[in-house]
Length: 152
Image 1 (cartoon, rainbow, N blue to C red):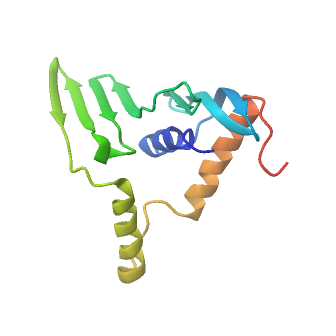
Image 2: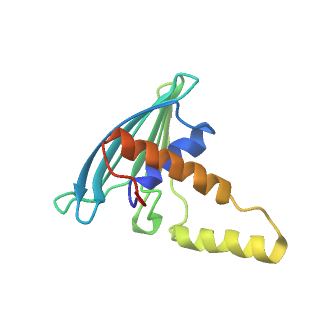
């Protein structure tokens, strides 16, 4: 319920849907921590997404998001900690375009969104309903991996 939740959330938000089928495997460390979680999720429209999160001691940290479609591929390198370096790469029709954005930590953007909600009444990007839906998918991943659900 740490590093693996980010790619699950990315998939849910990119597709705007919840998975209809989930396969998962996990390596569990103490105390009941999923130190590695891999998933394969199928969606009603036929899209298949895979995710992985790995916090084992011998694993080097990396965060990548790759979306492959019929017209090309988008790769975002390090969306979690852009201040440590990041890259956005779009490949279409044999052409590759790369971009970088500012190196501001993502927590700064989260704080901006929170302040805009409190001060100006703007809606948050995610809400309690989204959090409950995210937790339901994580529970399904845990079940698929044979893990004990939290609170059981």
